Image 1: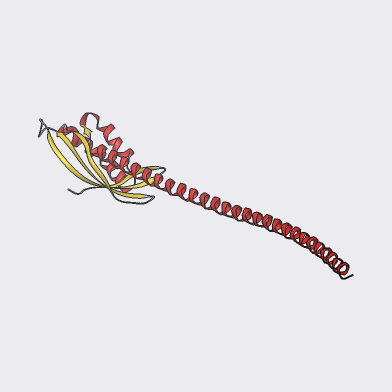
Image 2: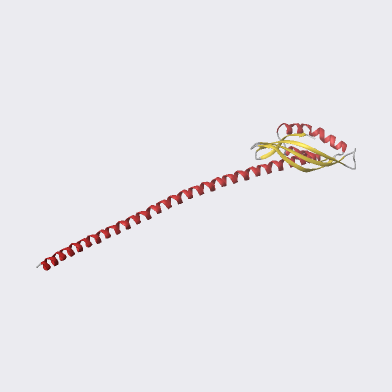
Length: 203
C-alpha cells in the first residue's frame, strides 16, 4: 500500500514538473520573441542614427564646397583686376614715353585714348603746342616698360608705379640718349576700362 501511494505522488509530481517545463518553454518563447523585437528596434535605431549622420555630412560637405567656390571666385576676380590694372598702367606709360614727330597725331591720340578726367583735358589742351615742339626738334622716343607695381587699389581706383626707359633722339642728340623714368599713375575704372586720371614723374 505504501508503495502505491508513493508512486502516485511521484506521478503527480512528474505531472507538475511537466506543466512547469511547459510554462518554462512558453516563457523562453516569449523571451526569444522579446529579444527579436529588441534587436529589430536596435537596427532601426542604428539606421536612423546613420541616416542623420549622413544628412549632416552631406550638408557640411555642400556648405564647404560653396564656401570654397566663393573664395576661389573672389581670388580669381581679384587677380584679374590686378592684371587689368597693371596692363592698363603699362600701356599708358608706354604711350606716354613713345612718340615720333612724323606720327605725333597718332601718338598723342594713343595717350588720350587711355586717359580720363583732368589729365585728359590738360593733355588735349596742350596737344597743338606739343605737336609743334616735337616737330621742331624732330623728336623720337622709343619707350619700354621695365617693371610696374600696384601701390594701392580697390574696385574703382588704383595707383601704380612704373619704371620705364626710352631712347630719345632729336636735333640736340641725333645719336640718341637713354633715359629712365619713374612714373606714378592714378587710374580709375570707367565703362569697364582702367583709364589714367593723373601722371607724375617721381624720379
